[in-house]
Image (cartoon, rainbow, N blue to C red; front, side, top):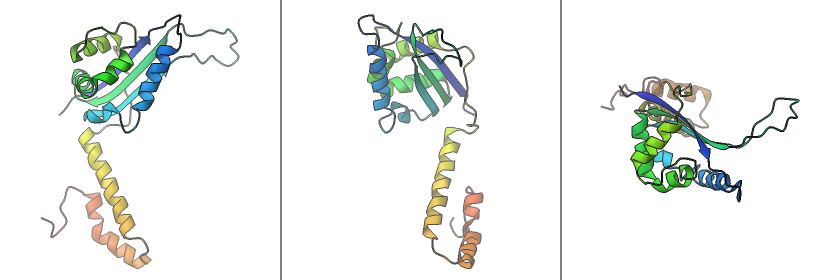
Amino acid sequence: MTAHSFLTALSPIEYRHDDPDGRLADIREVILRHEQDDSPFQNCPMAHMVRLQLIDQLTPPMGDVSGKQLKTKYLFFVADIDGRVDDFLDCLYRTDADFVQAVWGRCLGYPAYKGAVFFRRYISRCMFTDPLGYAGFPASVGEMLKALANKQALADWIGQHQGLSDAELQKAWRRDRDRFIHPDVPAPGNF
């Protein structure tokens, strides 16, 4: 069985007096540009869930008028993965080294050297010793993909059976339901 790992890292973002929000805006732009279809995380098959979040302000408790602000901005990086953290970080670096450099390269302490090993070492220094895991993913990536395929097959079945009478729909469901209830068991005649 593959190990299940959580990664939680907090990287301080370099602050420049001559451009106080420049690095933050640059990181935000890179993250937004890669958020959907162009995400380097989609090419890391062991990733269940990955989240990058910029922490750039404190939300004061109600009634607090102290005006306290963060002196340093942070990049919060959380991943729920099948496998080892090092393997995931290597995959991310190999998938899109430019993305890694554009995001973490603007954080304090990121090495000037290029390579997956330096990225891993940097994230290791920023990691929480007790990572914050996300609940709700008790299955492996393979099991989740299988469940999504089953969901799609059910949606296709529903689309194919639109407009049937109640009796016809019930008959079709009785005939086909084992495909969805027991997807690993071949249907009779489909060997």
